[in-house]
Amino acid sequence: MKSRLGVGGSDLLQLESDFWSGDRLDEVLMEYIQSLRMRFLTAILSNAWLDARPLFSDVFHFDVMVLSAEEGITKPADEIYLRTAERMDLKPWELLFVDDLLPNAQAAAKVGMAAIHYTDTPSAIRQIRTLLKSQGIVIPD
Image (tube, rainbow, N blue to C red):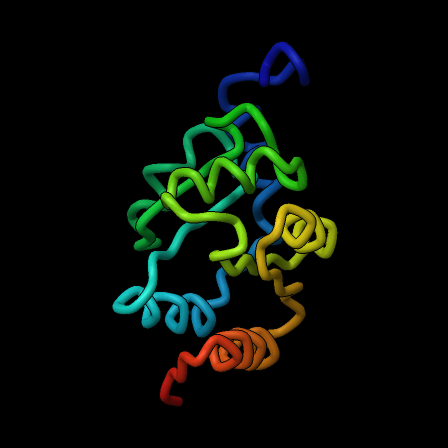
């Protein structure tokens, strides 16, 4: 990153901190997704920075973690979604993708994933439940 931005050391750490400072973890949605782990594989696909894996591993409990900085490719490129499906040993149409950025959800749908554009927690959970129900899977409230 230093070569691309001319920033390094503590300035780079501050830049990363400032860049991600607007991001907020939706704890209710994360708890809901975590509750699905008993029945489904879960994954995180993130455009996070290179050293994010240890932080995510401490906070999140997913079966698969695909980080664009490690992969050298970012959302919404088709390949990152296909890599995620491959790492999960599933086909794209067997996956449900949720993202707060519409272009990312559209890109996931383009490769065959069911995709939800996250706008708020109740809506996202409702859409997940509706999609699962359409597949004959009922998740209790």
